[in-house]
Image 1 (cartoon, rainbow, N blue to C red):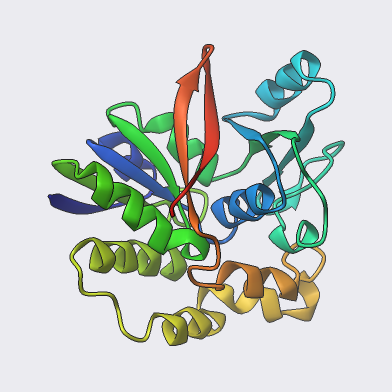
Image 2: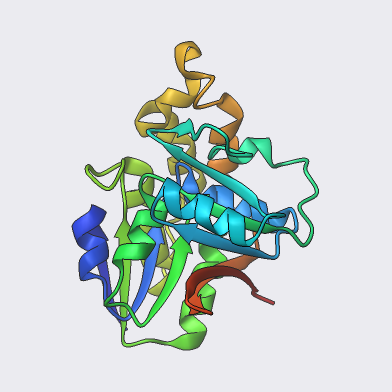
Length: 231
């Protein structure tokens, strides 16, 4: 298995084989929590306009997403996983658009298979890949808006690589908590709590909490994310 760590928008475009599009703060932590709360399916979209079009097709769907971290006006949710932690989303259809994570999914056109990546379900994601045993794995750290690297996505890529190589990073939980001093410091800034609530940090660094991978495939002409439970 050849494991490549790629970065940002260009990395998503270059991704081949099995691609893991990583967005820890917060898109794919959010999707993992949404599935953990019972959602049936998530449709990742590239644009706000596409999200509204899908909402017309699926009027009972939850519509969610952000731009520059801020909830899109009129949407049911933004991109804060802590908002979902106590909700019952059983059986719900979800439409989701973000500045980095869902964009990476759209751009990974060269990949044979796409998964989402976050610390919250990294071990299950690695196990899914190990069972498939692809020749090439592309770990894409999307970073902030796909334009600059961010420590949490690079750490997740390195952790996934270590799991796939059978040598897990021994202090991954400490390193995850230390993200509060780098990219995660926004979650501790009183001036940014309306957009980046403190509780989101806890959700995003809950390493390996969710025992499932999230795969994305084309179904009925649209990209569709589904939970894959690893037992």
